[in-house]
Amino acid sequence: MRDVPDFPKPGIVFKDITPLLADGGLFPEACEQMAAPFKSAGVILVAAIESRGFLLGGPVAQALGAGVVPIRKVGKLPYTTRRVTYQLEYGTDALEVHVDACAKGANVLIVDDVLATGGTAAAACELIESVGGRVVGCSFLIALTFLNGASRLAGRRLESVLAY
Ligand code: AMP
Image (cartoon, rainbow, N blue to C red):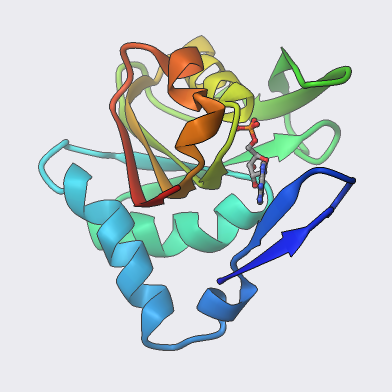
């Protein structure tokens, strides 16, 4: 992986995972490591966050014998949705999920590439719970611990392959 300074805006050091995705050995190994802490958690569904979360969520779900639920940006899902709006550093953003995405009480693992301030993952947890799922935890490839995203996910089980 590589750091790309000042992307997408000045002051952000972007964690570019495309070199890892392109490595046929490391990519499946990374997904296996994302799944490993949750092997005994009874995960029924992996909720993958658009868009880099989609690339990881599929293989993680396969490693757990689980299905996949897409958590998408506004207006992308075709059926009736629930929406959660959340705070960014400047302004707000929103995510959606299908109302029938999971059976009531189904164990769901949230998957994304990077945990930064935690707003995105917290919104994903809220969405899954709003449609009846039970969030067993969140698995990230990378956690930027200095941004203290865990504080927005208090009480949740958080795992990452790498932490900075
Ligand atoms: P946050 O809501 O602040 O935790 O941001 C997490 C979301 O933004 C994830 O979907 C990441 O893909 C993306 N993201 C935030 N910061 C970075 C970063 N430094 N490098 C790559 N992706 C990032």
